[in-house]
Length: 528
Ligand SMILES: NC(=O)C1=CN([C@@H]2O[C@H](COP(=O)(O)OP(=O)(O)OC[C@H]3O[C@@H](n4cnc5c(N)ncnc54)[C@H](O)[C@@H]3O)[C@@H](O)[C@H]2O)C=CC1
Ligand SMILES: O=C(O)CCC(=O)C(=O)O
Image 1: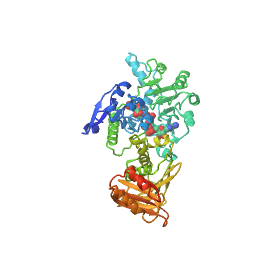
Image 2: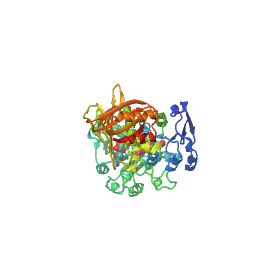
Image 3: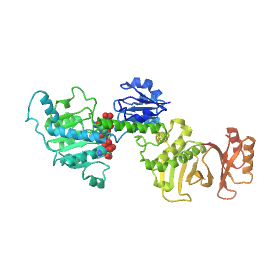
Image 4: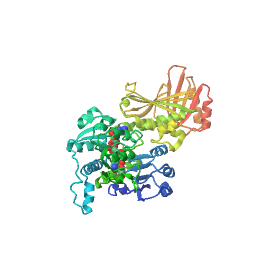
């Protein structure tokens, strides 16, 4: 039985697909400490969290069965993603489901701040009827600066335009065409900081965005600027914001996220009457919580069922149609990798993977990963998977190079692998042949045509009379039946290769006898 642990409150309605699956047991245990999670996590194949559970390396270390961690939301800063990658655990998020909720919350915060709605409401509750203190400002004709024009930033821009605001935006991935289509003015961070009446951030918290708005930026801003953060605490430096509020430079701030959450009971941000604070509520709508739960449950189910999935944060993400195009090549890539691993005897320093012909137009990253997995798992075993294969290669000191050429050779598509060790270079190439399935078509530059499957004896030898007979005799004496045979050579009497498909395994003794045949240069037993 597959077991899934849900360790934060996640919409039950959204988890439907997981709850209905007959081969899956879903257990909900919320509010657990790190130690409590460590004690039980070994029983589960998947862990689903929102933002409360901190999924640490220690928890993953105990999660020996863990294959996937699903985050019902966007930010994965509560998950130690490098530790998950190292362990080959897929980390998934649900990036789309709470976009509108967070954009709407940003807008609710902007209007609340501009019109002092929370402050006015509190005064009414105190029994006052004060119509002077709460004079606000309009959004109409104001300049809104958006840092980070991704999913949420874009939705905020659209809403701001509907309110008559002029939108300036900075995002390193914003193209002039997209800026044009969204009717936003593309600017630098500094240009925005200088010109904006309102500034809102919608980036992830990463090295490049930590303290994106700091003392220097506050110093450049217009007097009376208003600041919003509904993304992540730490994009705006709180200490600098507090100083700018004290000096009057900043006329208002609206914050949903903080450098430390929950916000401390006595936090200095609570002393300002012009600051609106919410406790990380951007995604807290009924709709968003159902959406993110549906998305994450569907994706986790796919990982558990070995089906293609989309939203992994520690894997290259591919749209479903692009994934479909590369899927037929995955098994070929994995088998090329596995075969190469069994044809070299000493440590590998470099792996070069080349794609030529039609395949070069595809998103080949998943094929590269499966090929690396096939190669590395021969020595590293089950601990290497699709997620951690590039990392395992890097940690093993193997340089990985991927090249592409759209030129067709004899084949319309060709995956080539060149593996370099201190003493040799081994080359294998395979193709996906319409109607014939995957074939190995080159071995060390010699033309062959072998199905990458089952057990094989692969030799390199001098092309001399009697070679095939001698090899056949030794295999016959060991009661090993030859199912298929492929020989490749470039010239009569020169070097040649042979690939024999065999029906039963050839042990080390048989391989030793084969290696002793005169003019045999190399013999390998390969099992795919
Ligand atoms: N308050 C809440 O409850 C919620 C907060 N969030 C947070 O909102 C943020 C944005 O989420 P999405 O729009 O879904 O993400 P997204 O990935 O669609 O957009 C982020 C954008 O930031 C841009 N970016 C990266 N580095 C940048 C830099 N140095 N300067 C400017 N832009 C940069 C990226 O190019 C990207 O377009 C994330 O931090 C997410 O965790 C998301 C949902 C709910
Ligand atoms: O689960 C939540 O409410 C937090 C949402 C959030 O911050 C995110 O999705 O990045």
